[in-house]
Image 1 (cartoon, one colour):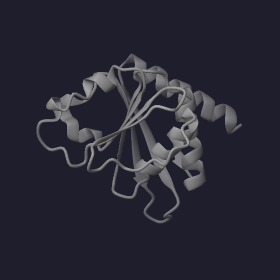
Image 2 (cartoon, one colour; image 1 turned 45 degrees about the vertical axis):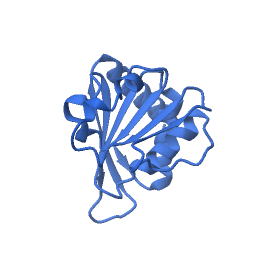
Image 3 (cartoon, one colour; image 1 turned 30 degrees about the horizontal axis):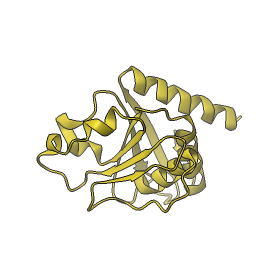
Length: 156
């Protein structure tokens, strides 16, 4: 999926928040500055959360409880070892949406069922991004279908 500008990125993110269900897990993969935190801010809006969303780089996880379902925003960029000791499973199987920046760093501690968004910056246009959806598991596949269906209906 080609995203033309930051406004479209935020719009996609709002859709993700609107269609997310409790227990959905979203892994955001991309280079520094690709827009992972920007996406999370839009997802929060889609969930009805109007708090300031900050990257939890040093705290690993921030919880936002005020939305339609809770948002668990994780940044595991600095997690190299002991990911399985962090107790993240409780979030992955819990009552909210887990958004995991740099999720590939978790390796075997990744949730069993998750949707990965791979964000690639355009080499010629700083505004553009290509987003690739990769689902791992049936819940993730259903999540992906809900996102793409709503995106298609609003871009006709």
